[in-house]
Length: 504
Image (cartoon, rainbow, N blue to C red; front, top):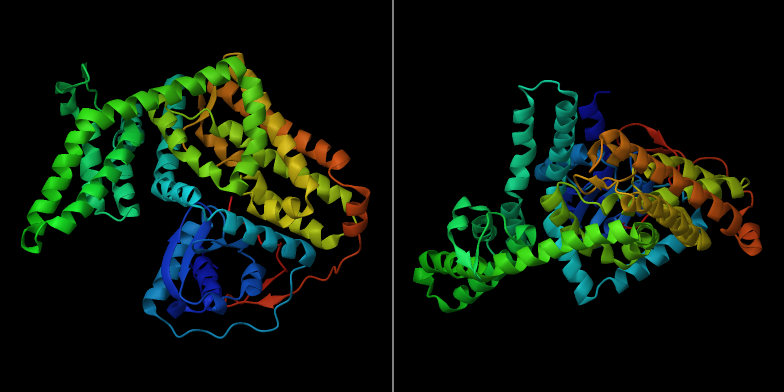
């Protein structure tokens, strides 16, 4: 079966299990998830979806999210969109599907997910989700340009292809030079304004002619304020536009509203926001560098250990603009490699759980199926399918992340900064995006050392302290070993899948 046929088969298998094309109101995707807007949630067959061989799990948030993994989701989404556009009749849900092989953990994971969703519906966390919605669509371009920048740097260091490296530099840098425009566009769209007006106001920040303007006794610099300035300018543009819509007569709206929106927002951006956002951006960069240079081991330990709880609380989304600001300023973010150690601790903890529960075939199958994704930085199945429902293994996974983060932070104190040229990937998937202030070999070695430290610390902490006597007695028992077989639209058979994960 060709790759296109395989993706088409996956889409065809998913569609009837979410209520058919008529039940889908929107289709989108992020790094790992197919995000569907649904008209009737009750039509979804969760058990059947999670039994599909290509599905790592499902997550219910503001949209219904099906975890397919990096690469796969980008190829399956267009096939889903094509099927929805064709509007086929809803298919009947498949019958006789087997239950999960780890029912107890699945039930606990679902309860935790529901509780987390309710807690995350606060105004502050909804605001952070909006911020994430602005930056998440930019991640594919950040990754692509980041990898090209890394390749270009390698060629320059080796002295190879000198006639090609300027072209690669232009390709890698073009997006970052205009990232403020894209942030402004997405911000206006997210906050309910006209997207192109948000982009137009944000474009002022990167216009070379701002170097002729003085504000607060200083000459402005193109790009000053960066993504934070673009975000603020676009939000201001949305409010100005909405004000104009209320007061400008309809006959004049098409001329007056966009003019006033760009003019008023642009003046405030030039004579206020650019300077203010520039000062904030500079402070963020200086603080991150100072923190890791003077307290790197301790800071790395805390950041690596606390990142999974931050994810559970939904507060990790506040870090996205900070990552982007650091990439814009320095070419890489020094925070992401440290935070990625949380995933390493999770992998180590899962391997320890595998060894501690030799009689529980269902949980061991869950871990075996989820570990490859975990190594690549996709932690949903392991977190909500294994460690968090068990309790203690989640805490010991955080311990592993703390030691991994402390390892990388220690080298930052010694003058070896390790950063990532893009946000999104972690685990092994972060290797192509690594950069730093030393040679590439040293940077890769330090990051690899951090991963190994996280794996080992997570494993040891979980193996020796991750299980109470009662927990072992409860879960180290014989379980059903026969794997359920489910026929899907692609004509394949799939085993029962792991418990349902939640958004991380």
